Image 1: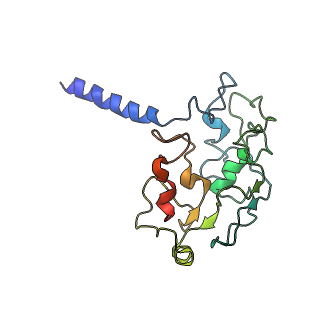
Image 2: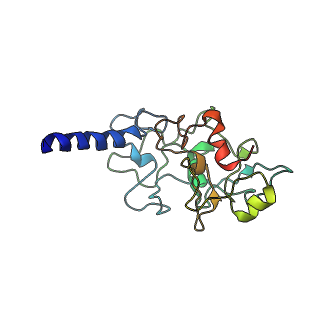
Image 3: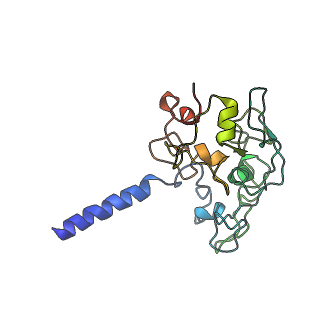
Length: 208
């Protein structure tokens, strides 16, 4: 009986681990290169730049034109650079379309990927450097912003629900990863931290 229970427990653990994965998703860039490591396109165990989160992809030197409007109350997101050390800067290392997908700090034991010179194609995932038609990122989501805007939910103690996170040393910075999960949360649309059915993800922050 104990063996049966242990086996069921291990199946449950394995199922949980396999449910959230980049394998077979557009972030699995090893699919086009047989025998290439999957994780190496973003992470390395040694010599990472920056060291958190063990980052392995070359960062962009681009400066982006950020979203702005007369109704926007966040003021610290304008013209941020791709290599500023933010989570969003790491996303844009591929998604601004200026750096090869396989341009890595450490190539690993299998050698340099052959797609090192291949940039993001002309698809919706290629955001370019003009982000004026994209949701703002790299700004402080704090009590001052909530008070100034009047249509944002206050950050609850312990952080937002629905998997939405804030980042940075003060834990108040809105980043691409606040809404997107590169490791593919199960049950949500590809690469969202949760489902947006009924605008649930949007309404985590916005009062509408």
